[in-house]
Figure: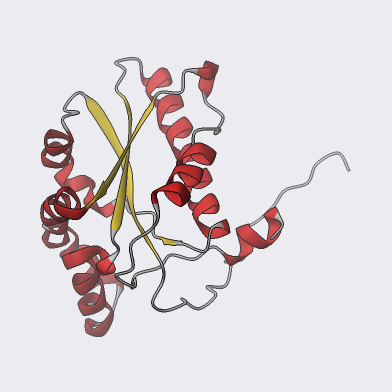
Length: 189
């Protein structure tokens, strides 16, 4: 699969098969993620890959963030969609693996922004590599309302939680979500 196909085929998966993901496949995905560019080549990230009991304990903390999101979700979506999101948050769709991406904290706002952007590049690499391996993912930032608790669980209280993603074999292929008509400005052509 070429890179353009991988980019266009990547979806946010919210329902997973319970099948375990072989460690060698996860290692390839992580290796690809680590090749992300980073501001001044700091590579300011940490990845934590959780499965089994650690995954379950982490998900129990993360799932509490639904209560924090619910008022906003009710403004955006109908009751059926809110119920679907609640079910997803309860167990992250049953994915057997969860990856947490954290970045360094820096008191300098410009350095912090570079760390966040670097972590986002790593996250995108991770999602695209997972797609290339036939795995589903879902970039999740809604859990950040429980950042302090999640970082404490990971043993990284001095980091910034960028995002998490469940990882596994999708039980249902999500539909293509059309791209919104956003301006692209071409100058000097």
